[in-house]
Length: 137
Ligand code: DQA
Image (tube, rainbow, N blue to C red):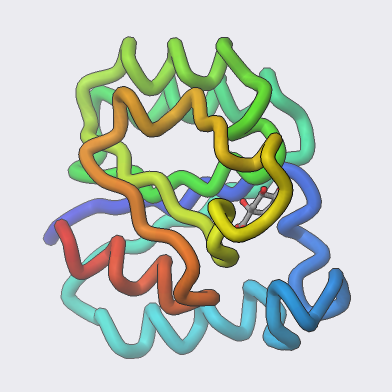
């Protein structure tokens, strides 16, 4: 069985109540339950943290044994050299995901420290971005 993990960064624990016009009204738990039910032949692990170092710890922990990482580093995408370096350091391929199309938003969201070392990037399809990333493995 393939082993994937979805890693979500800061403020993504608020999905469902946070700016629903941008991020939708479904909570991530509701979405994850649906996805797990749909992809029963894939082990889908989940981790969320608002803390940069915890995201790096998790990447290091899973990054030599899992088959794939689906990473939405949220705001840290645009600021974190540390998370970018961790993505580069590990062996498991990382697919970068964003719910919104970061390129039609503010300029500071156009920069990503993840993309140069990601296997691919999926963005702008709402929560479906995660599902497309799962399908890529
Ligand atoms: C986001 C986009 C980021 O710019 C933002 O900081 C987020 C969420 C997205 O999924 O669209 O928190 O990663």
